[in-house]
Structures are given as structure tokens and as C-alpha cells.
Length: 125
Image 1 (tube, helix red, strand yellow):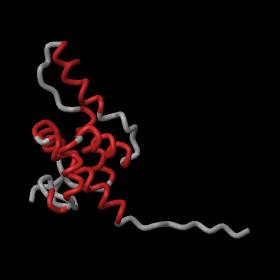
Image 2 (tube, rainbow, N blue to C red; image 1 turned 120 degrees about the horizontal axis):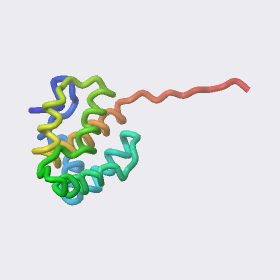
Image 3 (cartoon, rainbow, N blue to C red; image 1 turned 90 degrees about the vertical axis):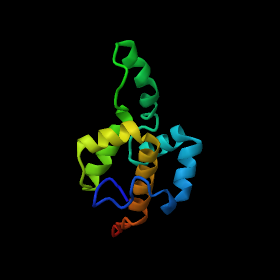
Image 4 (cartoon, rainbow, N blue to C red; image 1 turned 90 degrees about the horizontal axis):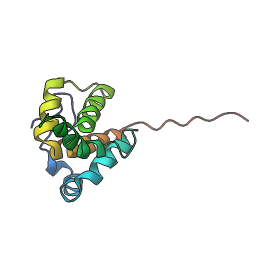
């Protein structure tokens, strides 16, 4: 399926791979977005900028904008994990498939955390 890119572990429309993430995103996308932001190490309230940004930009005569939090987190996840892709694809995905994008980012972070090695540092006394 389509994904972050060839190197991503989860595709944009791979909801059946982790139905819980997609159900969570469907019933409460803002909650899922805040969870993704927190798991990535950012402020959990960051996605709330996406709710406010359309109102702010339309007040200045710009009726359409890319959601800043969704876009920056998507790009950040791609860069942190070395996932191939382009900014143009990230903008398109964030603008036109925002819910699927949040679900994909949630699955990607869950999968990365599940498969990351645990480091135990034992200091002699």
C-alpha cells in the first residue's frame, strides 16, 4: 500500500494492520493526534494548533493552509527514522488525508517502540 515511503513500516491506508489505532483515530482524532505528539517527544497540545490554524489564516484572507502540527510531526518522524519521502508528499497527505496520516504516524511510532532495543546501563558500586 501507499506509505510514508518505501522504507516506512506502515502504509497510509494500512488500518487493518492495527485496527485499534484507526478506531481510536476515527472516534477521537484530536486525542490520537495528541497521543502521537507525546509519543514523539513533543508537547501533547501541539496538534491543537491544527484546529486553530484554519480560523487564523482565513481571518487574514488565506482560506487554505497545511495543518502545521500534522505536517511538522510527519516530517519529523520521517527524518528521525530515515524514512524516504518528500515534503510535497507530506503536505499533500497532511492536507487531504489528515486522519489517515495521524493513524499512520501512531502505528509507525508504536511499531518503532515495540521493536526498539532496551539498553540497560549497570554501574559498578
